[in-house]
Length: 259
Image 1: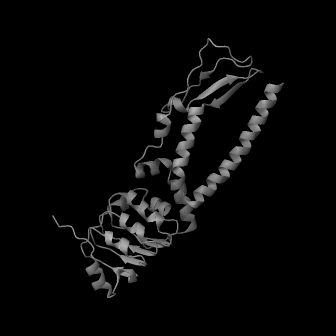
Image 2: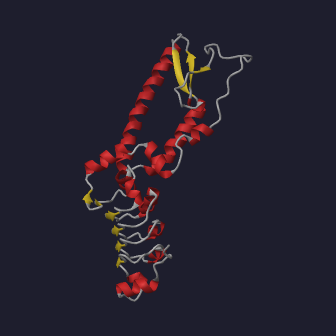
Image 3: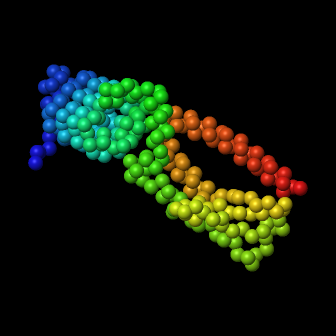
């Protein structure tokens, strides 16, 4: 079993022939057997980093390289695709190579990398096009994101308190009748159920419970940080359309109950 090898200041200065770490803009550490690259956090002006053919498994140290434009990480030991989230804070990253890492075998590898790195122009030597980004955003479902990030999308909904059933004893408004939970599809928790109420005209009206609304909202908000600009714009348009439809429904409901 090989011993761990960390990137050191001495090694960096020897390779780059500069006097200070703050002067390093390009660094080539191909095939050095490195496992620890935490020192890169001390390279504020680093623009190009070549780390191919090493034993790197974590990308967290790269979060401090805000000027990084090109990153070459072929043939390393990055197994968890979640590590790519560390690259989200690199605004100028345009070229990335992750091929020949275990994480590149993931079925949503390319989609997730594009999701995390909106400024990429090239991934593994292949140009990133606008059409590919749109297709990737559609294919990378919430379920796929949850699996990659190791979270449960329905966790908030499942932990929400169940709506209390009204006791038949108390006095109720004249127009209201029995309120009962509607049947829910298989696999959907009670907290996301709707309730059915009949208005004055006898029509059945469906409402989502307050607890369910809260759970759904929390789930949606928790995912916003994971969305690309294209996805956020699509969501914005969808929300605007839904708001208009809900206003129309509310107006119609008020008119029906006022008759």
